Image (cartoon, rainbow, N blue to C red; front, top):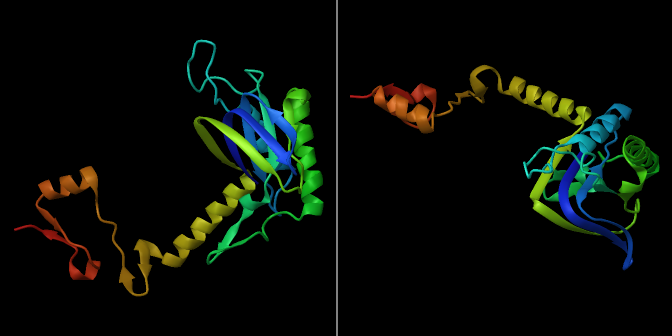
Length: 209
């Protein structure tokens, strides 16, 4: 599950020219549910959304209070396009949970938010409808959240990529070398090293003369 959380001064949802939901100051949450999401993912995101410290306290100290601390509102909008996977330049949405399963799952997330916080302060759009979402971002402040299932999947993908590259980044008979930059490059230069781009087999790094 993925969520895009925006701190807002106001946000509204309209369907067919009719405003169906609106909030004042608070959070607008765009939520994308995947086919692999479980109740654990839902509970994690609800907890994070309601407890993120994105607001200032009474003394103006930033990043001190959550939406619940300040009694602000939350507008949650289902957005399956967050589960997009690009195939060339075409978006593919097969990783999104099918609508017939996603709608009750999404409704359970809303109920979880309402039971955890104040139900009258949790608003939503219209599931499956063509909506216009008007967001007045405050800051701007935008946070991307991923549930444990997504985090585990990305970690596994990185491990597979590392395994394919092999030790020392060997790929297709070549040894790749990450050249030092910034302070490390300056340190190498002070030690009398000449840095050249190319393969290690062509003496990328050799003592200077």
